[in-house]
Length: 192
Image (tube, rainbow, N blue to C red; front, side):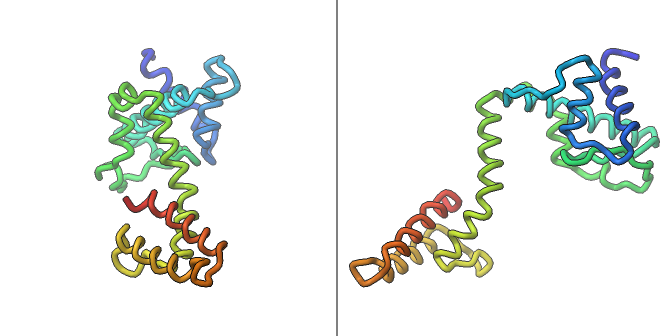
């Protein structure tokens, strides 16, 4: 067994011992233990990104190999990585897969620095948290994304209407005006 195939074989052996599958986190921990390392993952975000990237790079290569050899199928997801019986009719491997393409291109690993990882994490958390914030802000301004094209100009127009209607100088409520202002600030982050 060559040095390059050793991690792949270890990974395959670990997956064979867990027919129900393993999360990425559990798989990284087990690989670390198997290699005699710490029983915890790196805390540095760049180091953690590199561990994640190398794992997924190896997983996609392994999946391609198993499929080519008609041995098994490999389900790859951060929440569940597991071996499945070979399915000869899989069309997924013949279609273009952006994630597979990303992880098989090692320039992404080489060219990604700590600032890039921080930006990716920031964008992830913004999307995760932002969906709820954005919907709440749209509701506050009484706007619906589903009703045609919604752009910053339309949002500003609705904002001005509501400010005019709810301004305390015109008999409106200060708290409502603050909610409207906050909603506008939120939506400006999404509609630039």
